Every structure is written in C-alpha cells, then in structure tokens.
Amino acid sequence: MRVAELQIAPWEKNIIAPVDDLVLKPGDVVLVKSEVGVDLATVLEITDRSVAEEGAAILKSATAEDWQKMLGPAERQQALQVCHQLIKQLSLNMKLVDVRLSYDTARLTFAFVANGRIDFRDLVKELTKHFGKTIRLQQIGIRDEAKMVGDQGRCGRGLCCREHLNKFSSVTSEVAEVQNLVGRGSDRLSGACGRLMCCLAYEAAGYKDMAGRLPVVGDSVTVKGKRGTVIGRQVLKGCVDVKFKGEKGEADFILEVPWDKDKK
Image (cartoon, rainbow, N blue to C red; front, side, top):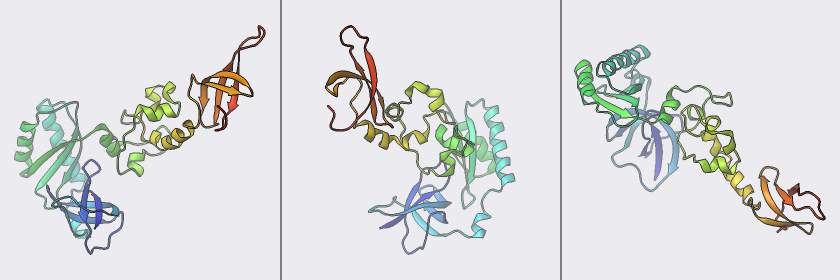
C-alpha cells in the first residue's frame, strides 16, 4: 500500500494516510480527514507500508480557494492576542506558541508549552464563548516550540528542525560521549530548545564504528614489544595514547600510537 506521511502543523503528530490513485510528491498540500476533523496538510514522504492510520484519508489536492479558508496573519495575531489576555486573566502558567484554524472553520487549536499539567478548562470555556467555535488546546514540547519560533543554531545556520528535520530523533548523552564532547559542558552541547543538539546524532554512528576499532582506556597493549596502558583515544585520527613505564630509572612516557586491528 502506498501511503503518505502528512504534517498538519509542525507541532502536531504526523498522519499516515493511503495515497490511492492520487499523484503526489513531498511538498504538496492536500486536504486530509483525520480523527479530529478535516485539515490542510503537507506531504512529507511517500512510502510503501502495510497499514495506514485508522480513519485517515486524503480527500484531494489543495487549491488556492482552500488556502483562503485559513487564518491570515492579522486574524492569527488577533486570535493569539485574545488567548494571551485570557491566560493572563486566569493566571495560568503556560506559554502560547501558535494557533490553527480547521478547514471547516469550526475548530481552533491553540498550541502551548508549560511545565507540567495545566488545568485549562476555564480557558476553554472563555475561548469558546469568545470565538463561537470548538476549542482545542494542545500542549507541545520545547523542541516543538524551537521548531516554530527558533532562529539560528550555534553553527550560525538556521535550526535543523526548521530547515529540514521532520522528525525528532532521540539524542542521548551517549552520542556526546562517543565523540569525546562531554568535557565541553551541557551548555555548549545544548540547542535553542535547551536539549542536546540534534546534529550530535548525525555522525554518532560513524564515531561509534571508529571507536569500536580502538582499545578502551585502561586496556593493556603491546607496541613494538613494549607493554603499556591506554590512557586516551583520538577517534578521528585512529590513534590511542599509550603510557609506558620507564626503564632503568627513566621516567614514564606517553606515545601517540596509530592503531590497527593487528595490534593487541
């Protein structure tokens, strides 16, 4: 079965729907029906899968007339302003990020970030009363927020999550350890969202493969007939730092040793 992975909003869960006889490519915009209603969505990827999301269906390719049903910049700003004011009045500890109008104009979805759970029942009541629409509040993560409002990364280029990443992968401290980056401190390894930078994972597999060819720190190795102890590794150079004991009263010394599979 040919299916399309669809994105309604950067902070929404992606939808998987059958393509059927439609001719689509990544970047196309379609009208999709999901469990929450009908919305415009962008095609991220076309793949072959055995199953699609239950109830999800692509209705048609979007037209200019379909786009006109979406909130314009002024309408979007007005909706956000109303919600901001109500959040302040109700003293809710939450940060509003985005708003989206459904295709049938009957539903407004507000995206927000917060530390922990928020009781927003009164906020929903007030928003429903003001807009006369079904109101949906969606709590999103700080990585999703960075994707929405972030600017540049430490490299000076646009954030990866805004430029090309459609999915967030798990980035753990292990990827920093295998690249010998832990000593730089968490501040230098964190992105705009405060989490470990996504780009740390790009070369992690290569580093892990290269590191696997080297002995670990503490191993005892023999180099040109001399026995020494590995005290450091230089993964990119394919070298290890080996400490040898001095002979006949000489001081211990350290050598940088290129490593290959024949050494033991």
